[in-house]
Amino acid sequence: MVSEPKAAKASSTRTLMSVIGASSVGTLIEWYDFYIFGSLATVLATKFFPEGNPTAAFLSTLATFAAGFVVRPFGALFFGRLGDLIGRKYTFMVTLMLMGGATFAIGLIPSYETIGFMAPLLVLILRLLQGLALGGEYGGAATYVAEHSPADKRGFWTSWIQITATAGLFVSLIVILITRTSMSKEAFDDWGWRVPFWVSVLMVYVSFIIRRNMSESPLFAKAKAEGKTSTNPLKESFGNKYNFKFVLLALFGATMGQGVVWYTGQFYAMSFIKTVCNVDAIQADSLMSVALLMGTPFFIVFGWLSDKIGRKGIMLVGMLVALLTYRPIYERMYQTTNVANKQEVTAATTIDSVVTADPNVAGVSIMTKTVKKEYTDGTKLTEVTKLKIASAPAAEPAKPEIKKTLTLNDSDRWTLIWLVFIQVIYVTLVYGPIAAFLVEMFPTKIRYTSMSLPYHIGNGVFGGLLPAVATYLATGAKDANLAAEKAGAALPYAAPYLEGLWYPIIVAAVSFVIGVLYIKNRPSAAD
Image 1 (cartoon, one colour):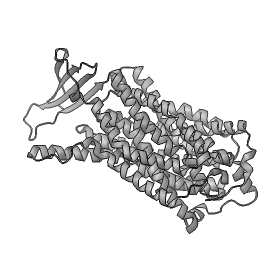
Image 2 (cartoon, one colour; image 1 turned 90 degrees about the vertical axis):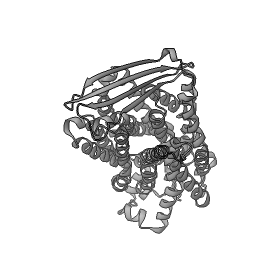
Image 3 (cartoon, one colour; image 1 turned 60 degrees about the horizontal axis):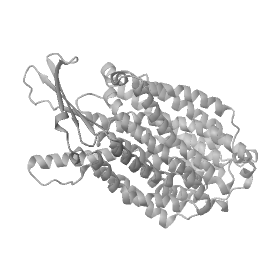
């Protein structure tokens, strides 16, 4: 870890607020652009992938979502090097425009029905561009704010940048909610889902104007004036054994665990509520928004606290409580929404069946059966079963597509809000201090490059793969139970819906152990 000069102390509070505002707005918009894809995953699965297997389509969507995360380290290398060579300001102006353009273009892509496999291919390409842009954005914003901040308040000031990731997710959910509620479900599924992607271009334009008027980081400007900037940031960051040791420690002892906690507490929670608990999409987005709003101030709290007691302990506590409590939390989420635990009002049940011609296949009809149930606690369940019936007998009988939608009562809704809120607190514990922690590990001349790579591998690879890997593990456990049941054997998994949690639990546990053993707790005031 390094000691920096006190030049940053010259920045007044007013200047710092201006710096944070300009940096945060742009970073928030980039996170919005990046996460709008994940927030709409259940809808996009039906637009850009073949029909017939909703689970496979959803997994394909999550894999495409994850692809954007996997390339983030490459964006970190490219833009990190650029930021250490030419400066922080101009680099993250480029990342902003790249992200905004890719997001807007996703909203223009025709569906799979219109252009076939070109649809998922174009989505994948644009998603990769989003990942490259985000790989360069975060390191620049965090470094820029940190280099304006006094050392003894660096955790507090950089925690405002940390808010932007959750705020970006929050804004994406709000924009989706507004769009959904402003039109019919049919209109949203047809074309309305594109609106949140198009809205991005307005946000990007405003942020670009703001960032254009920013000045360069004082520490980088000073180093450049003195001729102390790096001529080869990649070699100095990763070719130098001493510095590379800190890169590895930052990755395996901090960002790897922080990444899985972040994505479990927000994205996997949202996916679990929608696809496992089958909660209505509007209700799920609204309860997630409330939980995120309640938890967001704690980024500042733990960033400030890290200035007083150090970064390491706070982040490790977040990892520890997460890995110990994830399974009980998700079990409670599942049981809260499990209608098997509720008493049905049988007199209120309605069944409606309709047979229509398949518009895409001649000689095939679609039978749609809609069952609506009510429960004594006010919960409502709608189950829609679609079965394709061919005029000629098929070699294999068609499998019905079943879609369940649960509308919760207020009590259960608040139970889910509190359970998600607890997970958001874990997120703020590991994420609030992380920017200051990473900035303090590396010298100014290679800081952008050195901190960006471990951050984006930890979050982009280990964290970003979480929704797809966890869903795959849970789906595999469910399929194994179905196969065992069919064979008359004992079920191998008591709770298959919890099996996906082993991924974040194991990764967080490994990161916790490495952090405890090898990372030193260095108070920021020592800078």
